[in-house]
Every structure is written in structure tokens, then in C-alpha cells.
Image 1 (cartoon, rainbow, N blue to C red):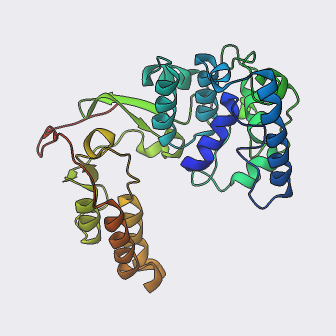
Image 2 (tube, helix red, strand yellow):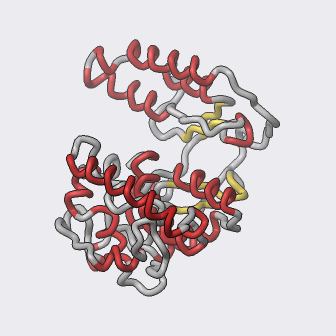
Length: 307
């Protein structure tokens, strides 16, 4: 359940994409049918004078976040959704997202949080089925919201059916009573941080370990490939993120760490050479950037926390 799939699904919940847009596989003939339907609806929407700002409202964003929490989407959805609300002139923040998370159960987990994939979710009923199930809880979904389909979100979810309760669970069998994303605060992130709680093992909900600090993504990759990170360490990468580098970079140190561990088990293909080649490509793509202001607030020897 990575960024692209997550945002495709959220677009359905917001109402700016037709049902099925988030889950129908690219090679499925239903995708071609969706193209044709979308083209016809665009023409009809012009006649109806239905514009994006008629669909994108505070209530529809709440619906998207409710879906995000119910399916444990990518943490990048927080960044993209906040950017969308800013563009739409909607006052929205992470505290509101966290309040939605606290009242929305996780009823669907997609790889890498489970063995199920997007095609399984589509087969089980897709986004409408997830929304239909959580709409049974008071205050979780705003069913009156308009969508580009010409129907309200409530009309779409009323037609939805869960066809595989192992992929999309019923409320009484939810993975957890709260959402798949959580906002954490502490002296490590005073203004908030986001964790994909749906992908965190229960044994990791409370964790303490020594911090290994790097000052850039490149330095972190080199350190991981050089075996500076050991099991039980907490990796902290400073000076990253939109404020520091003017762009949200796709940090990949966790993939490199996975590779340094699996190379001992799976042979040369998963070995150091493969990941060094990957790291070089990563460096070339990220080398041209602006650091912006630097903050030396995370230091060795101090205790940091998030909760």
C-alpha cells in the first residue's frame, strides 16, 4: 500500500475519481471501461458546471482521511492531503487527522502490511466496500458529499458489498479499533510526526534503543552499507523533508538496511554490490538540491521520545 495506490484510493473517497479508480489493476479490462466512463462524465460535468472545488470540501477530506485510516495507507498521504487542502483554501491540520484516526478502525491491510495486494482489495469490493463498512459507525463518514460520478458518496457505498471478509474485514473483526496511521508528538517531533501503525508489530509499540544519527540521506545510505547500523539501533536522519531540501524526497535507507541483512541469506543478487549500484543511482537523482536552514537540535547523549 504505497503512495500511488493510497492516493488513488483517497481520490475516490474525496469524490474526484470514479468508483474503482483506486483498485482496478492496470491490465484489467475494467480499467478500459473506467476510461470511457470518465471521458463521458467529464463532458457531462461541464454541462452540469460541477467543478473540483464543489467536490473538494472539508467534509470530503475527512472522508479521505477516514478511508486512509481504515486501510492503513502510506504516510505520504498526509503530505499530499495537506498540500491539497492548502491549494483548496481549506484549514486542515494533523491534529484533525489524528482525531479521525482515533475513531476509525483498521479493517483492511494491504502489502507490505499483509499478504494481500491491490487486486485482492479490488476483488473484495474495493474502496466503496471499505467506506460502506465504516459508514456504519456514527460520525465516521460524511455520506452527503458530492462525487464526480454524479452520485453522493452515500449512494455509492449503499451499493457496495464486501465479497471477501478476509481481505476487507467486518467491523466486529477489525484489525484494530483505531486507524492505521497515527500522529506522534514528543521532543523528537514537537509539531507532530506520522507513523504507519498498521505496519508496526505490537512488540514495537514501545521501543528504546541507541540513536545512530546521519546528516543526510546520502550519509545514511553510506552508513548502512558500511554496517554502522546494528539491530536494535534507532536511525535518525537530520535535515531532510520539504523544509530542508525543498522537496519531499523518497528516502530509501530502510531498503538498503533490508538489503544488507538479506544479502547474508539470499546470495549475491541481494548482496552489497546490488545495493551499492542502487545507492549510486539514488545519489545521482538527489544530488542537486537545496538544504535550506539547518537545525542542530538532535544530538548524541540526549533522550528523545514520541508518543
